[in-house]
Length: 226
Image 1 (spheres, rainbow, N blue to C red):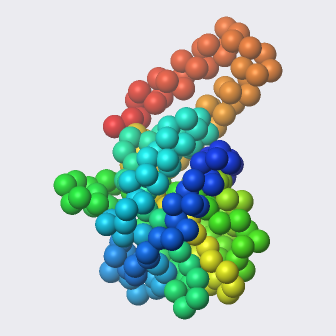
Image 2: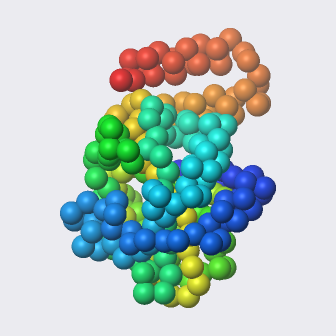
Image 3: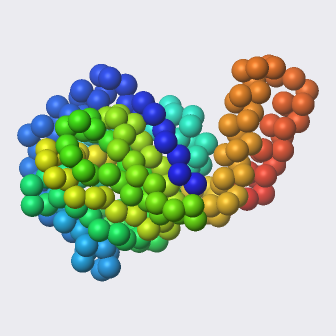
């Protein structure tokens, strides 16, 4: 399931994230690439030693924790500490690849299973040319180039790429999530029910039928969650 999550960051949070990244010292993005991905990865990444990275991660986590649409789409159990990358100049693209199934935490103490991937755009679309996030699913290829502060969530099993940035710089946050529900189709069913419940509460209120449907949602989550 591909899900656009608008306005994850508030305007003030976006300003702060961009301020923190304005003078960042970037390194080769291959530091987090698997064997196959490293062949096609040509970008830059904020290193673990960067003085800005802790504040940036706290900012992103705070935004995710209050976002109901993100929670509904991903059903996060564990979120690998977010990473930050940059595409510009000669380091300007990331060819088609699939994210590794297991991602090691930055401190090396554990692994997180990557069920869901997400890209949070930090550059405005008119600040760079190219740089679309291209994701393949059973319905074809889908291109995303969202406004700064917005996010796209997609299965980590998807084949995807970032097309070459021909002018300007594309800066983004990317992350990997282990979901409470491993199966993508079951996550989709739960998402559809949850979104329908949100809409029903707005239109008809907390009726008896809505209460019972809420019970169905939670009973399915209880059955499918690990």
